[in-house]
Image (cartoon, rainbow, N blue to C red; front, top):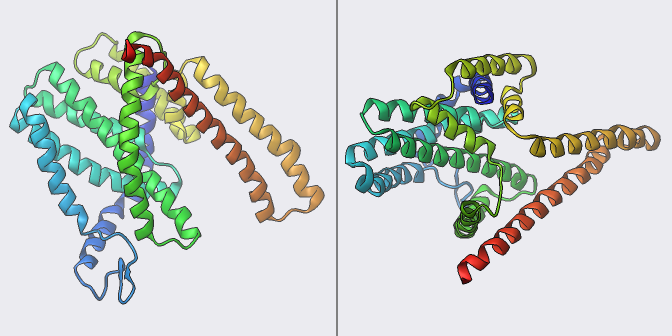
Length: 332
């Protein structure tokens, strides 16, 4: 039921954003049209060099990704299925990724869950139509959805970094250079510690909640003949649609249904404490001291820094715990 609510809220949210989608394709086409004319292009400034990262690399990387993904999966799943998988993944990542980033820029919400469910549905239906086995279909669908979700999440992060960089007059070209360096080094570190976490999870030493990953896995099982009743999925879908229309947060409501109390309770307590501080102290200070909007915003940012410190601290502690649990296995 919770998975249905996530799906219903996500799809309804995408439909509500349809007016934003109408201009996305036209914007992308206009960008590529301007790229070929050095006089009209905006990414290169005459006499100063590259201001923005050149968009001409996009077709090149699409071709490289298409060939690389096809070759990487063809040994296990066959050339034709791997080629279809690569085509769907490249096209959806580019097209839906552009939509997701545009939506994020105009609404401050990036529809990762909604678009990822669309990709999951698309991959499952395509590979079932091609006659692949249920196990191969599940692997390709979940891997493809994971890659897609990670890609557009990363694109949203990059856009956020662009916004911050432009505030401090840092050219997009320089921002993109730092992003690429961070991606390379971050991939190495992330792969290492992901391996450590997976070992600890497999041994049962760590119990980590991954609600969205479990939701996608469960939905794939339903699509491939799992035991979950379709009636519950439909009821949850209706609930998600209703909550999205009522509150605009149907996906978040569905995740709240899906997550256990041990995960949701700290979020509720943290949000309540933040609201209490804002109404009891910040708003009082605004009236008493006559703070301007800028001064109020700067004080409000203190809560963001505290929250960021909590998130970073939890991540570091989780990493240290993973090393602690896995190190005996590696040394033994």
